[in-house]
Image (cartoon, rainbow, N blue to C red):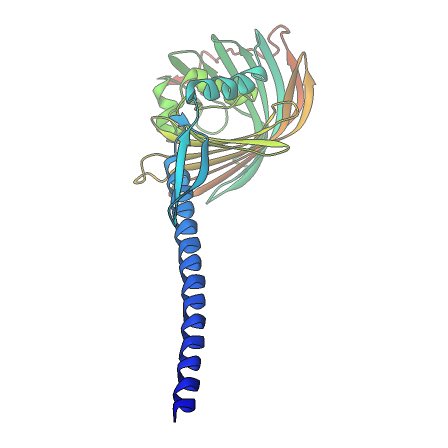
Length: 309
């Protein structure tokens, strides 16, 4: 009988030791899980707090032991002002912004809208901050001819219709906004034609730096603007504008390609523009001729016998 009791006591002691070992393992495992959870929480806080670049913070985590628990200590390194990041990125864009006195071009334009597809030849002359002259040749009412002429100044425009109902129309520069439903002013239109990015903002909200490209998102008063730069020479590859006003839901995608030398600059001779709101409009620009700082090649002389509107 005593022998049986002794055997039972020994078995109970062995079980107690096994349970103690398991409990120790579970305690260590629980501590490890707790540490991982804290680490993930710290990372999640970091990721979500970096939605904007008001501050650029480097978070260094250090795990220290205190008793049997593990805690995550978040140490903030010196803060870098986001203005420095913005200034650096904007300087990259400004480096390739084309400056000019005059610009002449011949452009093949393909147009695809909801109701009509067509192609035109556009002749363009610009004097910086002064005048834009556009002459459009194509098929108008079944007639192949120069059908439109347009002269745009900083505060007004004159349009001449030369086929069908012939007339001369004088309007303020705001007429461009009424027709296109895009907030064009003279400077914006000038930049778009020369190939400079438009609707830029210093309100940088995020960016991604890869081996070959820099992707930047900025938010202005009217548009959220995503711009993609080639890091090798800071060329603009892609620009996407989305309306800040979700009720409008305007969007515009511009792709720049086939860069060619233009003086000391690189000039995108091919551009694809896709705009959409209630309907979609696709425009392809293929620059066949282009010169910088030569005398204006195309003039504007509205016929005197056309009726005025």
